[in-house]
Amino acid sequence: MIKTIIFDWGGVLTVGKYTQSILNVLEKEKGVSLNKNYSQFDDLIVKMGMGDLSFQEFVNSINNKFEIKIKESEMFDVFGKAIIPNREVIDLAKNLHRKYNLILMSDNDEITVKVLKKEHKEMLSLFKKLYFSYELRIKKPDPKFFKRVLEDSKLNSSECVFIDDKKKNIEAARKFGINGILFLNINQLKKELLDLGVSFN
Image (tube, rainbow, N blue to C red):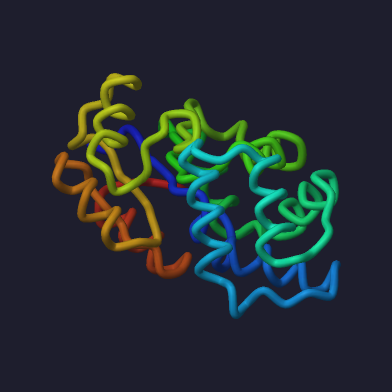
């Protein structure tokens, strides 16, 4: 019987790729296009998500590497505007919240988490526990991340479902005996949850 549902954040509870959304907002707000530097920009996002780079260092690196002038407060606003909530999945999570233990397990950086806590409190309140890569300094699909979540929340892996938009993360979860769903769209997600005996009506 499923008791706990573990959600990824980016690409599941949000729409699209977060890094690309940040670049889109930067282009609109600052008139600079960094798409040709996507991989370099994304590398900095990943380092921040691992806790290896502070937000101040991130902004300084952006300004130095790409010769743009942006303040930390401006970048904070950019990160906020880049978050596009997936309302259908969030509504589903609200229904699941009534019957199941929900956990958020996300590769995310400190500044994005600050934005979430400021602007998306209702969404975060659905989850009993929040696990972020920058705090643990572990990133999916590292087995240590899954082991930490299972042990810290005292979970039986066979009673858990993990929802993520990346196949490698689903495969890592399944190695721990966790039921995995590779998220494609809301209808597919609902069908696979029903197949696992999850009720959300």
